[in-house]
Length: 328
Ligand code: PBG
Image (cartoon, rainbow, N blue to C red; front, side):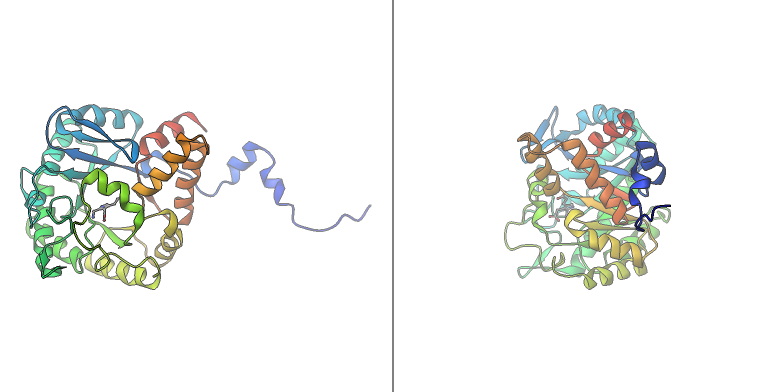
């Protein structure tokens, strides 16, 4: 017998598509996807967000159609952002029982009770200054904001929200919201905490979509420094201790190391938020014909799962659901 060189033959397990299917380690399912929606006041409004082709601000009367489409695609969860007409210093619209998210939630739950409505709990879309809490002497007042956030969460659940997703990055927001929900009798409502949220430039298009750009300063006193990794573990640890049921890492793509760190250190479901800027970049390149959009999007979403995410909040949810249904 001739002496063949000895080395590992990795290509054996890549030889055919069937073998590759057999040994694939990570899978993306429609049930992993959460679709973000921007709801505006008014009627018959379907306004495309210029920096997010394919994403619309929708008025409540047009939600029914959208929910039907999502349902047909097999998408079972949406996260709602409200874009109110009126804003004020305290973000009153966030916790008004007739607020835009509360109204939208009632409409969606009446139409399709099985559709999970996740309410983003923050003040920035509702405050005239665009910050995520109330302002006191040019800074966001942590403890005063907690009270309003807790009120917001309770009113969202009263309207029918299934999950509360607080994105404000105040300290203690999980405790404040958990106890307010419990006192109101909503002990069964999970909190999907934006536990690890960076002060990121990737949120630019969202702020156009939600009209929530801060009118002065930035969010660096409450959102995290992109340079930090250990801080992510401290943030997640507090939220777990305070009673979070899910941990969100946001943004996703430039932060997959953080997704993995959080996965390795905590046993709650991990959610990656594939944010607006990540969406806009792909769309822009695709519109120029520079990339294969479908292949690239599916690779990105799969990478988030491989990094350790269980769920992905993504503006690509509808596209991905279509692609998952048509390709093996
Ligand atoms: C609200 C909030 C933001 C996003 C989700 N919730 C914006 C921000 O913090 O400025 C960003 C989502 C995205 O970019 O897709 N605080």
